[in-house]
Length: 156
Length: 124
Image 1 (spheres, chains in turn green, purple):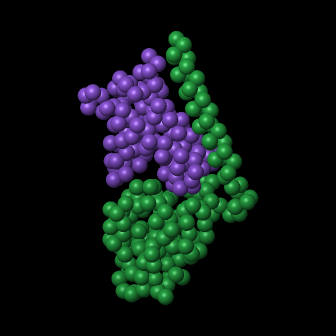
Image 2 (cartoon, chains in turn orange, purple):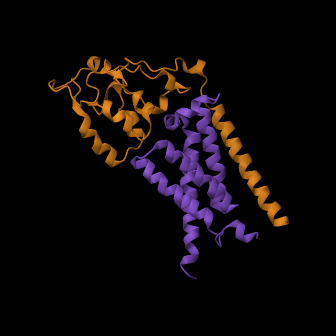
Image 3 (cartoon, rainbow over the protein chains, first blue to last red):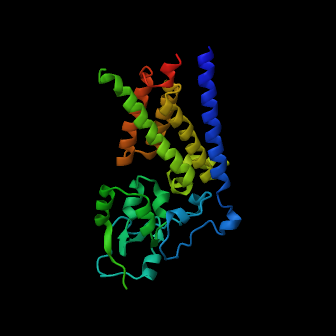
């Protein structure tokens, strides 16, 4: 009985430590006021990091679903390079381009299959997702999939 | 000593380290994990980062218990079912299949008697 109680005491200590870790981590969260807008600018182009994303139910602020006439065609054939302004117009779930390492990808058809969920990728539609892609630690397999969605380089 | 005696020890400690890594990682960088929350989580009156932190604290607590072999079967069962729920939420993807294997390994640990290096054994 005493040994069982001893184990219970250790568990209680571990639980309290975990609770303390939660409280400390929660107190470090920025307040919405301090962070400013909780929504990403859908037209913003710039290297963005997933770490700098302000959360708080941003899923509800996902870009509007725009029915596309060619939702999964990986391709707008012609152009040899794409301007940032042009890329920024493809900022919806039904028409999603993003930039990774100065290459443009049409990931519209991949969104439903993204292992990390739709929202993880949708937030970068029309934007530069280089840091987010690298910081997430994608596997070599995931990186190899990118080629299927390549449109071309970003124009200088 | 027979090699089999170490099987459960290796399994328990390595799985515990996996859960501890993700638990601590969620507490340090909750924003990295909010995208993984299922849509059903929206019904809860909590911010998504808070949910991630709670999940991180849960995994930290049970992962530590598993590491030391405290109530091994209970902690392994809870962690295994927890990961199985995540697996179902993720669906049939490469990550989902990997997590399915990890969750089954954790549940297998729950079916095992506590190993010789666990505190359960020491204090039984």
